[in-house]
Length: 245
Image (cartoon, rainbow, N blue to C red; front, side, top):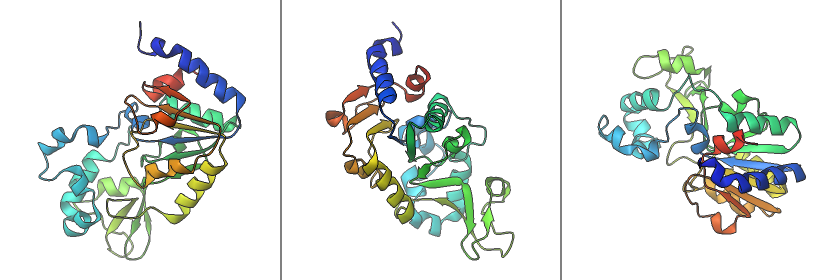
């Protein structure tokens, strides 16, 4: 019996929920992108420790970025930028459901831009995006190719200032406008589908508390703290589940 065939009843139930409701919000994490070949660095720290003197959480902190930009960008360019990654079945199905008037918003902890690449329009990127980069001095925009082609530390083509990716580092706060939009979408939703996240990263995971709708669905390979409140739980890769819909 295949892994997904074990969940055939749950997938049919998910299909029924999607059919019956027209105000669905999706909340996703790293597991949505791992099926596109983007690794979840939290699950493979041991590999990174072989090459770097600091754990990823330290390197991706605001303090480290300020104090050691060279090492920050050595890690960032090699481990956080994946230009060849393509949207998988989860990204594509969510975009399709938005077009069909089912999914009203996608709230993501990922920074890869794959939801937009798949066609989703109403996307709240809680942790920013690697596709946007701005000069800290003059605010000039720089694309991802500028970051990759730069020498050790990306500098602004306009003024020579440091260029920082528009991603939320550890020790930094989330964007107020993004949070307000995500909270409003969650509060209005009739169905919330949580996918590909362990719900271990705060404050992002705390946004789930604003959901007061009818159905809470959790799709994740491992248990999450919200399973006890869920109306439907599917412990399987989200891309494979959405590919069955």
